[in-house]
Every structure is written in structure tokens, then in C-alpha cells.
Length: 478
Image 1 (tube, one colour):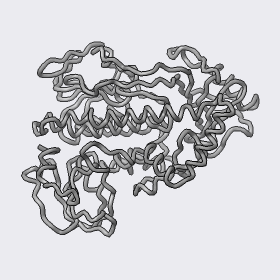
Image 2 (spheres, rainbow, N blue to C red):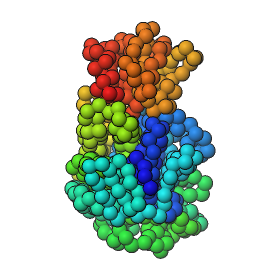
Image 3 (cartoon, rainbow, N blue to C red):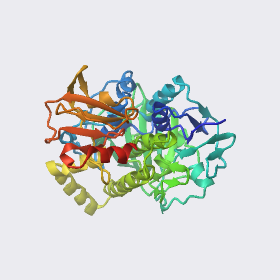
Image 4 (cartoon, one colour):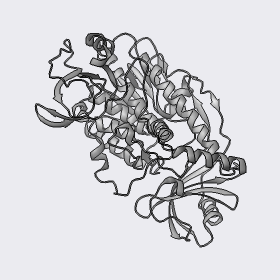
């Protein structure tokens, strides 16, 4: 089989990348070793920047159309009892969007299948061969390959790519379950995440409602000890933890899905090895705090997708593909750093000194400037890249076709030249990759009369820069 891009891994990262490539008209094949989709909830929500990214492609509203409606709460930092307030970042999604990872994966996979994109399950990668002209996996040949196959990436192993960092120091379980009976200590309503952690009987635990009668339980021993990661999670093991933390009157109903995880921290040194790229957990892992992993992965995909498409279609300017590593590696490194800091603050076996630090951190988080800073960190709304402006605000516009938002103008996956001063501007023959729209807005644009926005939603140029538009067009769109 011949294709252009081979994507290994059908998690959120791989599926979103395949969506971006398909949108650009680039043939792609997705390989997944699991024969069926993982039914476990895993990451429980989308951070605000990821919600914005999905909105850029018109995916957010249909994704949430059948999702259960619930009261939304602000995000958290280290499970401190203060909601993160993202409103100062001028986003339409100031709170995390509650959505199990399984729902996101199912939605994206169905979208791809409806467009005829092969998502081939039961395909385990054992060898990867690359040469000057392409990459081969089994009987499939492509011009490039992107490893989106998780923390234990088979592609990374096949190419002997190091994964430096720190091994896990604790073992924990995440499980989706129902309860046959529950004590008064079991939460029955959705709330801010800080209300869920408990410790008792030598265990730490987080138990919170999902949808319907499902709960998500995270637990481990305070000592950090636990079975090997490959050992199956048993109902007896889950039952013991429930009894220890929530009392004997709390009884397990059905254990629907479960897995083990640790607090290992690792990151590949280079996101590109020849014609092979790494994204999502194949490129970086950290303790699962605040849904950072799935959000990093989706944004890796949207950063890489348009650049890889430009390369395949023969219109990428020199060095464009290298900006994927240059831009995304530091973002993940920062997430690894702050999740390590949060893990210290969240230590369930904390002593009096650490409790005092948490108390001080809580007071600081109530200060508007501290809250704004950490809400930007956790949400991804503060992400900026070297030599590129901030994310484009989703302005309310009036165009020649009627009212619109900036995100409405970017569903095609192309760049956007947005003129707000009434001037007509030229994209220099790049109409196939940059759309020019004139519009008006009543919102604050800091005096800028026009913006050039990359397909991933970041400002590549504005009239406030003082530099020529053509320079930015050539830099990013060839």
C-alpha cells in the first residue's frame, strides 16, 4: 500500500493529525495495534486552548452535541482549592471542557472513516525502515511517518531513539467503575477537582462521577508501592482500596476498565529523526495531572499537520518542518517541569511542612496576577513560539457575508489574512493556502489593522509589527 503519511497510533494525537492532513488533501493511513478502541475514560477533559483548536476546525460543537450537560468549574493547579480563571486570556472557553478521552477518540475516528481514511486496527509495528525517499512499515510505504503511539512507542523502540528522563517512583491505578452501594463520603455531584482527593487506610484516592452511573477512581498506596505495570488490575484490588478510603459500606458494582500508571517524566531530545516525527506521549510523558497529556498531543498534531502537508505538497519554505521541534519541544518541557512541581504539592503523604507550603500556595493562587499566570500555564492559552505572535483572539466580526468569528474563517485549515481596516491586501498568489477576508470588529485589537494567522491559530504578522507582509507570507507559506 502506498500513501503519503503513515500515522502510528489511533489516540487523540494520531487521529487529530490524520484529520489535519486529510483537510489539506494529503493521503494518510493510521495504524493502531489495538483491535478495538480503549473504552476507558482516561483524560477527563479538554483544556481551554485545545477547545479553541477544535473550534478552529469546526469540530467542537459537533463533538459536544451529545455530551452530558453539567455545571462547569474552573481548572486546578496541584488540586489546590482555588478555581483557575481563564477569562483574562480573552477566550470563549474559560473553563476546561468535561469530556472523556474515549468520546474524543470515537468522534475523530468516525470523522476519518466517513472521509474514507484507513484506520487499520490490529497492526502492531515491529520494524521501521527509512531511506532518502520515504518510510516503510510492513507493506505500507509513505513519504513520512509520525509516531503517535504512546509512552511505550514501538516506533521509538524500532529506531532506537532514546527517551531520557526519570523513571516512575510510584504506582497507581485509574479505573472506570460503578458502585453497588456507597457511603456518605462518596461524592454524588460534579464539582471542582479539589474536593475529590482523600487519604485513609494507607491509600490515596480520587473518586468522582463521570456520566450516567459511572465513576472514575484513581488510587495507590501512600508508600508508592504497587504491582508491576503489566499486572492486570483486579476487582479485589479495587474493592480493597474502596473499603479502605470510603468505608465497608461502599461496594464495587462493575469494574468496567482499569489501567496502571506512574509519575515517570521523559522527553525525546529531538522530535524529528529523518522522515520520522514524534508527537504526543511518544515524544513526552509526565504525571497525569490536569489533562495535560491529551492537550499537548492534540496541539502537537495541529502544529505539525499543516507544516507536513506543505512539505508533501511541495510548497513548504526552507526550514518549515524544523519549526515543529523548535516550537513544541519547549512547550512540553515546560509542562514536564510544572507537573513535577504539582506532584510535590499534591503528595498525599505530606508532612506538616508541605501542608504549610500548600496553604501558602493557596493564598498566592487567590491573587489575580498569580491566578492569571497559572491559568495560562495550565490551559495552554499563554503559549507563544519564537518569532511568532500570540494565539489569535476569536474576535466577533462582521464580514461581507454577515456575522462571523475568526474561528469560523479557519475551518478549511488554511492560513488567514484578516484585514480590519478596510484595505485590500495581496497574498501573492498563495490563495490555495491563505484566505484573505476583510471584516470589521468592535473588539480591542491593540491598534492593529490586519493580521496574518497561521493554520494553527497563531499570529504570524500584524500591521503593528512594522515588517512587510510579504516577508511573513514567504516565511510561513512559501
